[in-house]
Image 1 (spheres, rainbow, N blue to C red):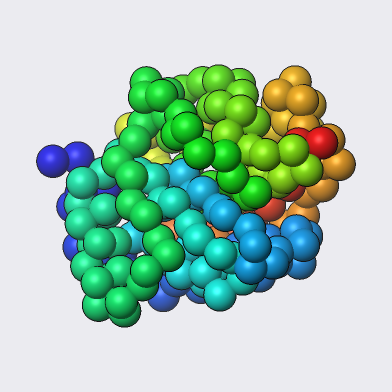
Image 2 (cartoon, rainbow, N blue to C red; image 1 turned 180 degrees about the vertical axis):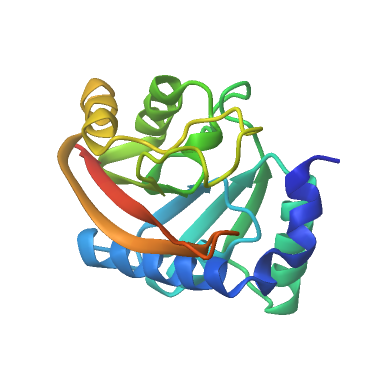
Length: 205
């Protein structure tokens, strides 16, 4: 059992995580022309909070994650709400093959800073998209390492220009970036700490 299997049990009880999902979904809707003919794919879906916010605007969504705990909670929500147009997929796209199906939009929130090879994952996202389709990545701005703490081995957020260069090298066009959320915490020293979250969108022409 990994840390996300454990976190899954209380993931939806965190008001910040719920609010973050709402704001990211709103930002995606603002910058991508969503419609109900579009088939979506979320990578690092967790319990599906983001996709449940986007579901009214899409035809169907495939939700992928590598955490059994998160996918178990997601499956229970799909059953509870009798959702027929969501498909759950256990997948680590760094090591697993991409789906044969192609999508109109691929999106991922707060996942890339856990992934070792950004260029590889963006290349796979590009391959998964139909022509004239969209990639949306929401993640942390570069920070001092205090967001996760000193034991965290992943990326300490991303410089926006650096991420834009990853998009360009993966052949995406019409790249835009905007702040979509701020994680606000109060430190043990009673200091207010703000961690901006950006949404970067690109298009496969």
